[in-house]
Image 1: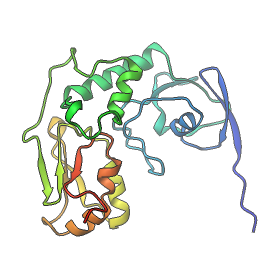
Image 2: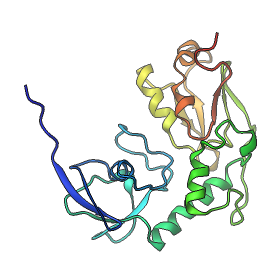
Image 3: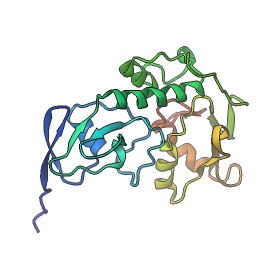
Length: 223
């Protein structure tokens, strides 16, 4: 049997005409065509998107206000702008808020130089040390989720990627969000140690984390 070919459409992003697959996620379409939009929570294949980081703002002709690109499917003739004053203002505000609840200790962080927060800050020309908002850090700084996995709540940006990838191999998630507001954290779901061996064999949550907030004491593949 012949595979059905994808329908291709044209959209315009920042004066560039792109040919993309109809219905494709707008953020993904931009990234695949070399147009960088800051994003911390987007994960290909996860639907619907959480849009929790509020970073991937764009303006679309015909809409009254900026929208999160990760929540939009492309349509033929769509005209998108990624670099307007309103978009940059929203992105910088969101990033500064995240940094105000983030322990900026890059030198001692395993994600240093590979960190999406650092990349977004460079792109938006925002200092990592927030001068606009007071710092709010959680206690304790390190939480053992089970004997082999440590959680660093003051690195965590609550992007939800770890929850999403955990859901797949386990059949049901063993990680979840707990608490509310500023006190929201990632927590282990279920009796202590009940899934410890499966988690140590998997470690997808630690690999997907963009800020090294989840650390296994014994990396995957080590004896």
